[in-house]
Image 1 (cartoon, one colour):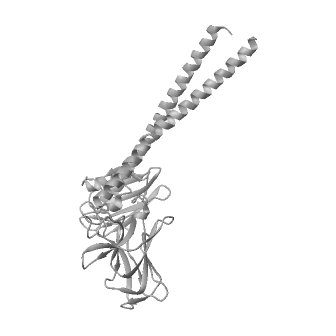
Image 2 (spheres, rainbow, N blue to C red):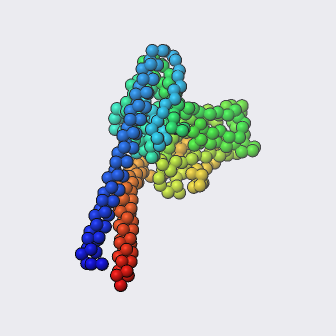
Image 3 (tube, rainbow, N blue to C red):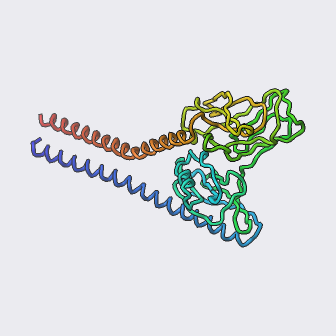
Length: 346
């Protein structure tokens, strides 16, 4: 083969390689863009459907409706907030963008969650919650979500399933509706006073500036109840909320007399993401950490900021790897053909 022919073929291979890489890069961008546009259309449709439901329901005082809505593909939750009430943001650490929006008092009260954080938000008028924690996240099933609405005159109340469960003593277990808190009464445990009904419910953190709660604070009622011998309390922690070493976590209880949080000897089960402690009386309990709340929040923000930066590099890295692979294949093909033709000329 003549030298000029080899050079011509090499230039042709390089040209084809460049074109292939350009198609790969811009084709990937176009696919992502088209997917974003489809998502955007579905997001706006959901927004308009929710607003229409609220407007329609405002005509019927006292009416309750449960509506089924379609969501864009891949969305896992829809969160509603009553932004006219004081909302504790510690439990929102798993959704940093939602937490920032609520903390900064942005006029957004509906958030669509995808890939572990908020991807779309909007404001729907006259939404209220009567019960703490004044927000609720509905999980999607098969691309749909069912949301309950109740007309309360000037406002539309979002019906939440975040209610306290109760047991008539003596029974073995009391489990919160979100399955994050559990009280276990072992064999032979007596309750004083006897014959009462126990309940468990989320309540505000009485000392948010001095105590970091890794999730909701739970209060077991009625107050003043004691156990002989000890009862067992189990509190689960969510790794999305608490992306730190679980060995640093402990169950804490609120001392009503000193008005301070005190830590209990706690056993950590990292497989179940659960802490266990023995208790003798009823009060407020939470997963906590013996550290300044502001320092903990700052470390969690830094963690999620690093995770976000990692995600930003995923697409360029994948594109680079694919590009290198294509280049390598073209070089191999070229060398193989070049050697074959060289052998034929000999």
